[in-house]
Every structure is written in C-alpha cells, then in structure tokens.
Image (cartoon, rainbow, N blue to C red; front, side, top):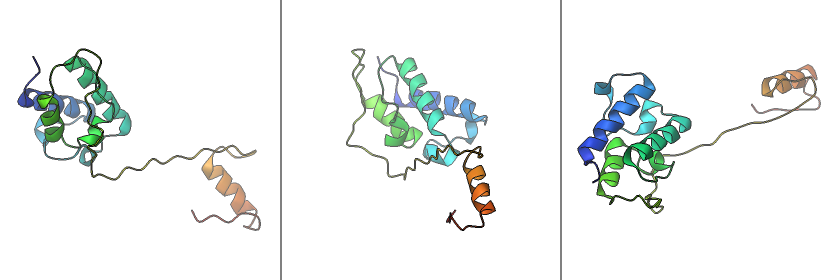
Length: 133
C-alpha cells in the first residue's frame, strides 16, 4: 500500500531539512524546492532516496516537474503502487520555474581555467581578444 500524502510530506520535509542542515520546522511544503537552494545534485539524490523509500521507479526530474513538497507528495500519493519498474512521472507536467544549465570548459596553454584565459587576454592588451565578461 502506498504511503498517504501526509506521510510523504513528512518524509520529504525530514529528508530536505537533513540535506540542507536546517530544522524540519523551517520547511514549508508550499515553497518551491528552488527557494531552499536545492542543487540539481541534491534534487536527484532526493529523488533516488524517495524511489528507494517508496519501492518504485521514479524520474530523477520529479523535483522540477513537481516543484513543491506539497505538489510532489500529492502526485505520488495519487499514483498506484508499482513494482514493475514503470516510471510514474507525467511528462506533460512541467514546472513553471526557469532552469539554466551553465558550464564552461576550456584548455589553453598557460592558463588553468577561464580566469587564467582572461588574465592572459588582459596581458595581450586586448589586441587579439575582447571579452564581454
């Protein structure tokens, strides 16, 4: 039998508070995960732990599809038990939170990373390289 919405909320609040190092009473189930500064790594870890606790397969993106504890718990409580490895995420439901994936990778002789490249460029007096950063 699946846990109730109230049980799922309690579990999520406890796990989120533990992951963020704050008291469970500071967690508002109606606030977005993003408002607590939950990193993408922490969100995927939370989804994996939730998957293990429920004993069924879940999408690692659930924290974005259901961006609050309340919405996620409501969705999960409404789903039937499934031990058949089915994914229960509804791909038609998307959070209205903006998502940005930011990264930079570079290798340049004499530079240890982006700051090093900009330092080298600054040393050239900008003759060969102009940065808008």
